[in-house]
Amino acid sequence: MRCVDCAHQAVERCEVTGAPLCAEHLWYAEDGRRVSERVARYLAGQGVRVVSSREYLERLGKSAPLPRLPAPTLQPRITRQPSYSDGLPIAAALCGSLSAASCAIFSSLPLCLPVPILAVVLGTGSVVLAPKASALHRARLLGWMGIVGGMLGLAVFFAAVVSQRGWGGGVP
Image (cartoon, rainbow, N blue to C red; front, side, top):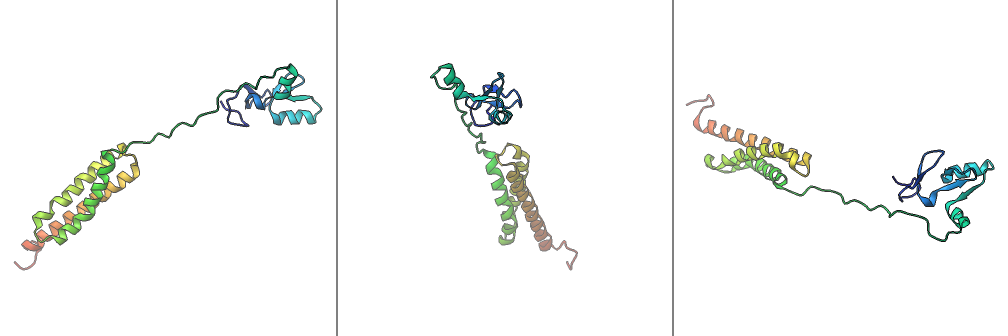
């Protein structure tokens, strides 16, 4: 528990408000209550005598510094290490975006068929493995881009096959 006035470890609570206080921000009322500085100012305005922790220690005759626990240390931010689950969506998106273009560019249809199929397979793997990736939303988005691009590439492939073979219902 930390002091409400600083980042030091609290050693007491204000007996009026219950706020956690470190030794430096603890005040003492003449009736023996331990209070926060805000409550001490209020009590002083009401005519109650209050003393700070430094003054309290000086009156006791102690020259030792105030008791204080070590300052809090910042915990390192835990990040996930990149893994295959981060590279797979990128490969899926690249294959998906190239699949339709590859089918349109290559004149030989059997050469362009693996690219859309690979895009769909990689995209599906990316979506399935997205929870293991360091960026869940990015992995899902890129995976779906691969799937959609692969499906468009397959549609272009099958449209080209149908148009070359005359399956479109036209003149034989």
